[in-house]
Amino acid sequence: MNHTILSMTSSILLACHLMIGSTTANATEIKERLANGLEVSAEFSQGQRDKPAALILHGFLQTQNNATVSNLGNALATEGLSVLAPTLSLGISQRRQSLSCETPHPHHFDADVAEVEFWVNWLLQRGVKSIILIGHSTGNVQLLAYANQYPHQEIKKFIAISLIEFAREFGGKQNILQFRQAQKQVKQGDTRLNDYNLSYCNKYIAPADAYLSYASWDGNRILAGIRALKLPIVIIAGEADDRMRNGWINKLKALPVKISTVKGANHFFSDIHEFDLHDRVIKAIAE
Image 1 (tube, one colour):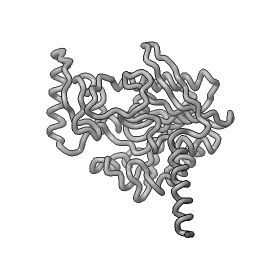
Image 2 (tube, rainbow, N blue to C red; image 1 turned 30 degrees about the horizontal axis):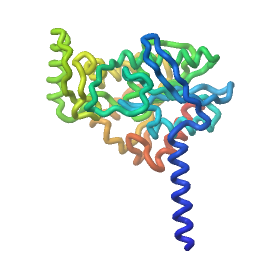
Image 3 (spheres, rainbow, N blue to C red; image 1 turned 90 degrees about the vertical axis):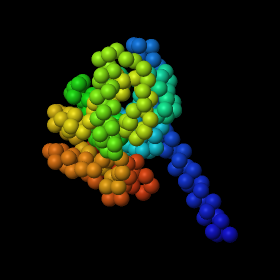
Image 4 (cartoon, helix red, strand yellow; image 1 turned 90 degrees about the horizontal axis):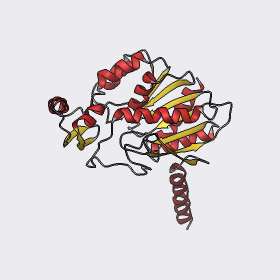
């Protein structure tokens, strides 16, 4: 009987945890319209005025409801920070769901970066004086490009969680061939949809120019972007992250930046490693 009660209690606690992870604590859904007419949204939690605001960006084709992002936002809101977690539109008004790899993807990397600028200005217009950029997975690449392209004195730090490339480790020669073929198609004005390998997608459907806008952010370009960055950057990585290609973490460690690794943590810092991630992000903000 006691075992049954304990089991029921555990189930209730797990359900509560999952519910909390679905959105930031005390968050409000913000809906705005871009100059191009697209409707975009974000979750915003107002924190203490004397603490910084965190802008957290999700990874490839995801939304702000990604568990790694939403649970981190919840933890930061509990610490009294204002938290803004936008969902990139990827060319779709009021996008609320993650996109599959096989969905046609005409959206461009530069448009993602422009949306980050929109949301940073949204914070600034509300009197925010200090902003911490926090990315997960390839969301870090958009933030890296953004921080180099749109410098704001109010942006104080960049925290990159599970930073990876858009390039694929396996099938390297094939990736080079498809990249060169895409470049050729762009020069020829070819706008047809094609199949590509990109990030975790084995079949990423996109026109050549849209594919290249992401695929051009390979390891060398990311490393160069980090070197050019005028912001302090902290990289947090899981030692069991199987989405990092061989040798990538060593290249990051060779940079003059602070890198914090979590033993046993995967790309999403699942299960008990979630708490390690939250502690390290909070510490990085405090520093």
